[in-house]
Image (tube, rainbow, N blue to C red; front, top):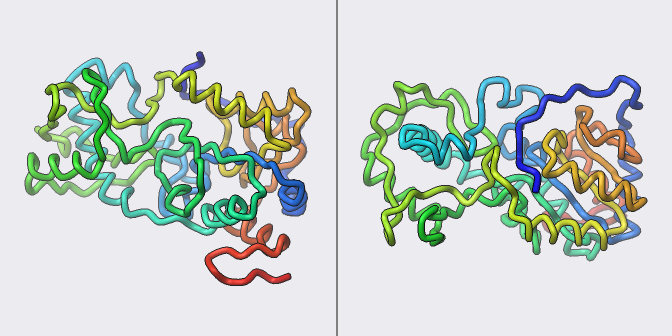
Length: 300
């Protein structure tokens, strides 16, 4: 099983530029059976930054790796200090027009399913059903010793109590929920253990360098096989965990449509890439389909 590495990728110069016409997306949805694969770009309009877009956080932030997290207490202290502070902002994010449009498409029976590479839970908050969280979710915590799961809000309360008055000013928040803090700001932040066995707690997310659970990957591959087309929303497809489903769809002769302002690693497999902001594009598609988003009647 492939792991989730950070990859270096340069857009190919021989690929056609993206289009500004969302009609191919509307056409695919009219057919039905569309499988959505979403990435960090769909959440930028909710105030959560992208990794690789304009101003992307990878230019200033190296995501925590599984090897670092499990390798030492200091790395875990740094992670939980940053993640605890980031959660205060991250946990308050609300679904945007893109999330709400995807949910509306699902309510109208146009989708085969939704696979998200995001860990923010915003598709579910917008009432999308059956969302597959490819990389897990930040709202759950798992013990690496006994395997017990617990709500993130419970851990947040415990960390608040253990670190009363801890309130540094972060330079920014990242798509993985981390706040940008210096080592001095992390200081002697106190990490709390599992309440059941005293073991190490980890967010229930797939860190870089960690494998996506095989059963989850197999389920996603089944969704691709059963779909009529694949609609990629806001993902650069730089990591293999998402790109493999694009490759699978293309190999099976199913149209791949991408909505992303910047070129992606999957463009060579795509029938089209719509180079427009996601919220604007999906709202326009909903209008063309006469679909209601947010309780207001769309034009016929």
